[in-house]
Length: 314
Image 1 (cartoon, rainbow, N blue to C red):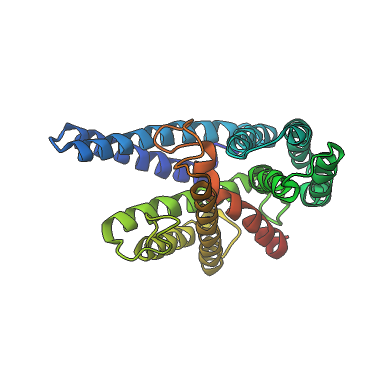
Image 2: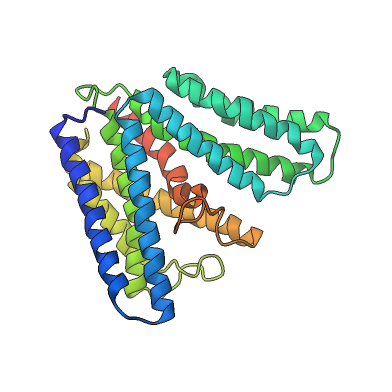
């Protein structure tokens, strides 16, 4: 990422400007006298803002040093996310070998392929070779109890936490005419739109939410929050067209698509958590839960965004 790029400086200024404003609002709210539940809400808000500061700084530092550092960053994110996913998944002794292969062979190999810019292989390595290898390795152990269910959980973990997430740094390898050396902006576009969609859905839901979408699955997701968040993120995507190879309307349509994909990702991950009887995948990120809680929407949006750009702009 070229930090001398005026467009990037504007975007970074906007991001950190929003964080400064949010920090000031959080600080002012913390000074007001309020009930204990309100204090807890403000404390949670300030914890989330502090976590956003840390995540933005780490993200910008990794992007500023090029593809390999972005690959390392997202590789670590995949590692932590897969660990959280597996922790929630009951395993038997026969699953240990497939999991070792998942963590120490398939995960690093996927990111090596991304770093090699080998699109033809990284796009099929996990959904084809990993999909076939993991159940075969589990079958060798000879434990047939709940075999299909156990294997499916391992495959789901590696697909969501590794394969889908790896499409985020893969955006840096796209060779788009007239856009050389600027791909970091595509990654920023994806992350900003998807994460702001989550934030706006939360805000609109708190302000106007009355009609729950799936009450048994996610009581906090409302129709009002969904509409406000998705449309707000789409409008922000349109406003960010100047830093992408997209036209205004194309930027809006793509932002709408990845915001919808992100919503679907959050819903599916909520279903997994609900089925497992937990609130969060982990507690690593203060105020947010686990790594997988923070990237659940990105998991679904990243591969769709990559393939849309790859298909229409290359």
